[in-house]
Image 1 (tube, helix red, strand yellow):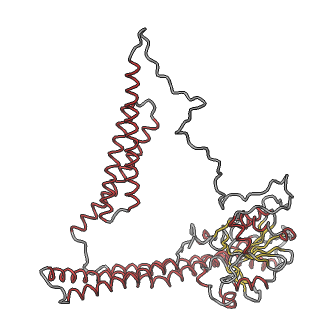
Image 2 (tube, helix red, strand yellow; image 1 turned 180 degrees about the vertical axis):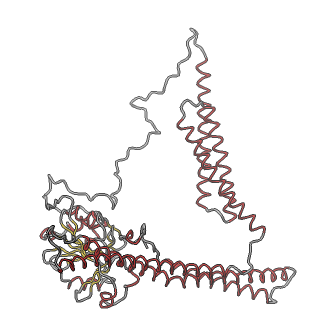
Image 3 (cartoon, one colour; image 1 turned 90 degrees about the vertical axis):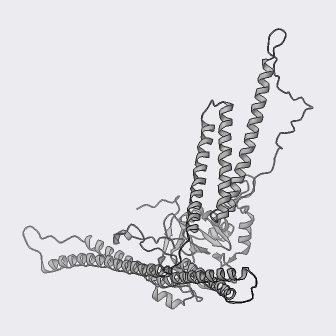
Length: 519
């Protein structure tokens, strides 16, 4: 998961101290578990070969012995994978506790800092020059000082809470690492041949990188240094060709040893072919230049050199190698601005000409009452759509229901920018009849300058969007979940559980840049 925003400096942290994608960790543990199961099956198969008497002939004993040795090694590898799975599975709860604990510590720190600032803003009551403070004034000063002290203590307590959370997370990580190391204490080691092979693979990888750098340096010399003669350029091209040939051989060896890829080998071969073609062209050009020089050396009867007239083209002559004239324009991209009809020749209220993808999205969207529209799947998002129809929103707002994030909205398989959504909303004439637009879309209002702000600029109107994830019940009740809370903690939970267990987010108002606000 990305780093969570917040005032982490209150806890003496440069940023979010706990970042982890629990879904990715669980997926990797499941992958290792499957690897172990497959290897266990292979080891069992080899055990049958080693212990059976089906094989006959001179090769049988050697093959059975090899099968037995490989089976034993595979069992050790299975043990290693299983230790990794156990370590990762045991570490996951510590990660989740660390995420929640660090979020709680930040909330405590923000609250303590706010109370401290509020108390510091209240000035002490000063006694007049000819008198003393009353008992009430003395009590007020004492109470305000006490509040400041409590806020400092609470801030220190929040830092201590975070320190305890991080210490426990580090301890859990150490335990997981110890479990993994224990799995490798099985006597399985690389042979001398394996170590030599690994060293050679590393050497070839370094060699290919060095050759690439040298080749680029020679290309820069040939391109940037003026006045190089044909002989020097041909020498450079020859060196380049030799380097590429060596790189092709190295890439082929790497692929054979399991340390390379077909793509790298293919690029090296392509470079060799291109370099060879350039070399042939340079040789041909040099030969032509030599022929022209010999021709120019021949003298006419009066001693003047024979001119080398350029070829001329008359009205009946065709340049067969000229490139064909192309009249086709590049295709319209989804991320390009939408096309619009000329406003001088078309009614001003004419809708935009949409890209086919945007047109399909608009055709599949549906109105929500008389003041809104949803862009959701009627099957997968049936619950969302039912809740949208019953939400108690302002009658002065045009409401847009769509899946979103802090920078994009998500419709089907497409990620749309603020300009794309604005183009779609302008297709609905009803959108112009309301004082502002409300985005019921997760995290679109989480940060300033994010999606909601960009959308407000494109629509040139006020946009209200959630800082967090709106959780809507089928009867229209709404709770915004704080953006710090991971999705995995509240997906498939009921509304009462979510609204009582998780901290709330908020609605935020975003003004377009064209608006000015006077104090």
